[in-house]
Image (cartoon, rainbow, N blue to C red):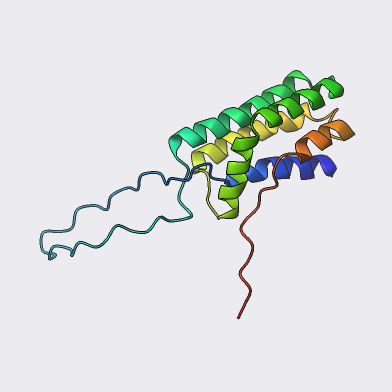
Length: 156
């Protein structure tokens, strides 16, 4: 159960957005000719729930793919896995903090990025069969920022 919880926390960042800037929005289809021209409005305010920029998505997916690769490569040596995970997390601390902050704002990764990560979670779970219960491996994974949805607003 602890392995599952660690994996859920790890993949909880799948909902995180890594960007401070929103992805470009798709334009609405052109209006029918019968419709009067739309009145120009001020540009919309920055939406806190927009997707991550393509650059930030690539950075986070590269981080996650490497985390999975480390677990797969070290699947038979828990001590090595724990050390390698610690080093990987340390090297990407700023990226993980950015992801956790974005997730706390309710921002999300694009569906394609989440699908990519979920495919790799299967590899990760297979690699964690031996070391998932190892205290050092769990400690390494628990060092990652805990993601989650923004707190619920109190009812009035």
